Image (cartoon, rainbow, N blue to C red; front, side):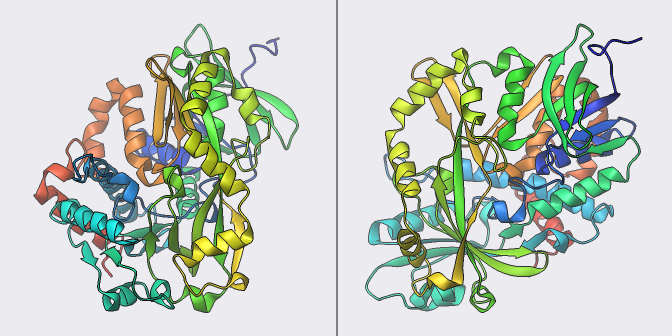
Length: 498
């Protein structure tokens, strides 16, 4: 009789941990590339897309750097660095190509089930900020990825672009905005359900919800032994896998630490909670059709850039403003207050202390946000909607974000605000940590992981990838003809032309 310690209840080629858009994207890509591989997806909750991928837990911005000012910092000499903006837009174009392929191939019936065209705008006030936005526009407007972006300081034009933002606004303060028709609103929760629906129709795919992964260890044969708790059935399971992807959002760090791979040493997490004001007046929401991003406060993390967003969720138009940042020791919205304390190790404690020492402005900002009153939140909203009334808005809790802290030889530790890919054990395990731009760039992130972890198979998969993603192996930012082709094709297939 097999002992409990070595029993295997199920075995897969691939195990995906987490029920969000990252695991769903990885699963869909691998199933399209290698249909005969078995895949098991384990999610702790009763449904997929209930944490950060849920439509009301994020702003749904298809991050393409069209409006996000933090992707275009000002250099010391006053010039604008657009390199990050180009990289982010390039990555989003890869996601758009994959989504267009899914629509053309019938995997997704209608792009309107998860994607809608919504103009992206940047909006600033004050002479210095207006000058910065003008110089930013000048730096971007001639690049093929940002073709069609417009700039204006004319109040009449601004009223046409964003009437709700201009209504009741006093004269005398310089105003400026950029406007791009290439923007989108993405329902990542709906996209996750569509991808999981596709996977569930394929042979060799198992969806295991209400199953919590509690441990994972690599055995002498190179297989991963994944300890799983069946929360509904009350059973402990042992699952074997050749490859494990940890795409559990904020919950990825504790699981990565359990792998014991050297690449996980020295990594810590800094959780940041968030809240939005959601408009409850449909007539008000109908008067705004854009995602309007401003400038972040001094000391604020990039994810806390204020923005007023049109959302399209289940066919209904809504309006969000925020986010208002905060702090919680939870790594997931439905996590535990012990998540942060349990993640502290001797190998990451020094990095955490160094980050605490070097990021006092961020600490002060978060304390201020935690102590913020409803009156103060409404005042921040009125910077964007001068006529806003408290009775038209409800406060909702956003998804939890865990920023990456990494050891650093010079500073002891650094706090990162992007996404971080960690792979190890000869490419048999990968984890995704961090936050924005996150879901918008899920496809290129997964392609990076696949290239690292399956180098042998990539030679065979490359022709297939080029049919799914025409720019695969090239950069649209460096090829104007390819850029135009990709933009025109994805706009037509994804119905983003108007």
